[in-house]
Image (cartoon, rainbow, N blue to C red):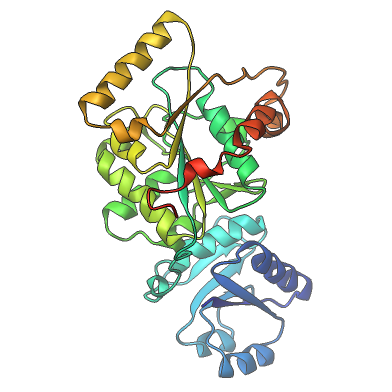
Length: 343
């Protein structure tokens, strides 16, 4: 059951636009209603439970206090002076996506936040991994292309475990929260779907998580915990597919590989690269990972060429040689991603 968000602002254009954006963008959590008068808000609240009140009216307005069980979040025009006392404030004139993330971050502290959002139940779900012991072989470009193309048909979440991704420059995006925050809450036993929604960004139709802030953060989580964390995200969210770029997550990578239904492995033919692949496969065999090994699909991916500007990076991937390669790769291969029970 969706939670109700009341957007209360004296500017009808702002309230209606923001409500409409929330309803289009945040389909799984909130249903937004726009209000421009105290009387209409009070009348609605008498017959409906308002879970979140997002308001641009002054804090001392009487209507605010009358919604006693509602999480109150104030829209402020002052970017600098926010979060005074127990009253939560977010900047009013930022993007709709940023407002939704801020609302999620506040609401996930509410006692009722964990009571709903069970995910998609029996819907088919999968983790598609991209991994190789070989460096500079196109792993991240391949994973991003797979994610963007699949996102045209289903809900996809892209996650990278790489240490230094360059995303802040390649995608020209800055973020307040990232994978480090989610791992912290997971270790504390406080992770749930609203935590995830407070961190998610979008690249076209594909959702993605900003990577970890500091490499040392990975020392705080074991490979088994990382695998469990990824499965938890998949089970509790409404994403059907996680595309996982394992990057340089080489430390005991087998538990993470084991939760993937398929692992695409870019390779090279030079002697050093082939030696690395052989050594990795020997390691997998020694650790009893023969079943994991059956899910590996070795690929020779095209090199990224012709990219003139960083801001064109996602489009170059999607519509260039890499995108054409991935569309051909994925055609007819969805059967490879079924889990072992055939679901």
